[in-house]
Length: 367
Image (cartoon, rainbow, N blue to C red; front, side):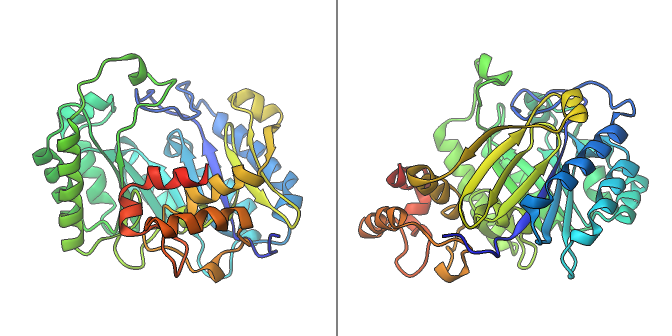
């Protein structure tokens, strides 16, 4: 049975991108914005209003503007969306994040966003090395990456970095990390390049670094980041103390999230059930009618897998009393098998050191 106090976050999807990155499978459009951000903002506000039954009397724990490249939208349209939910924010300062690409970062744009209510920036650097950026098909270079990082140096921000890129070496990866450490950023999202179906990379033959080089990069990251005050708190997330992402933690702790905008996903709980659904993907279709698709109730074995794939990502585990869901008996039975095999912690919900090292295999216990 679900409790009534499930935390709720808001995800706002703004789909515009200047180019399609060859590794990306997100719901995006490369059509120019052309004033459609104002029309989309109106549709999003209407969508949130029509979701009042799902929100119930809850406040948003966090807000995240993702995409796409949401910073391509006008600050006015972002402010319009934020103004519409002011009364739904928690009394203390709500974490409100926007993703930006380096080419969109200017002192003027950042000041406008801060005035609109944004208080955290997620900067999509991916690499500071020109040949690695070219291999990723990014539309910025080292110079613009450094410039954007410098503009954001006094602002609560996080940097996205990818490793396992073509032409990348442990030495160049180390150089990327050194640049981030020198920038005084307080949060890092560190992702290994994965080749997803329905991406440009999926159709190409790539010369990616060997497994030994990938493992060496992971060792370098652990040593260098820990030495410089970062702690790994989730599979892909490193933070200085107190700067963890509230929005992402809510996902991994199995909180609820309301997704608005074309192609956005939601997970909503009540005392009877847990549902997941998404919004239709075409931009114009969503602007005209904010329909939901693929509505699904999550229960039984599917719920066990869903819980494992989220809760076990958190590095130091969770106390059971901190969860906002009563864990099903079927989950606990599988969890005990993991404890017996030394893969899961006995005193809280989480993976042991061995289980975390082989997390994909550990999650297989719940299938």
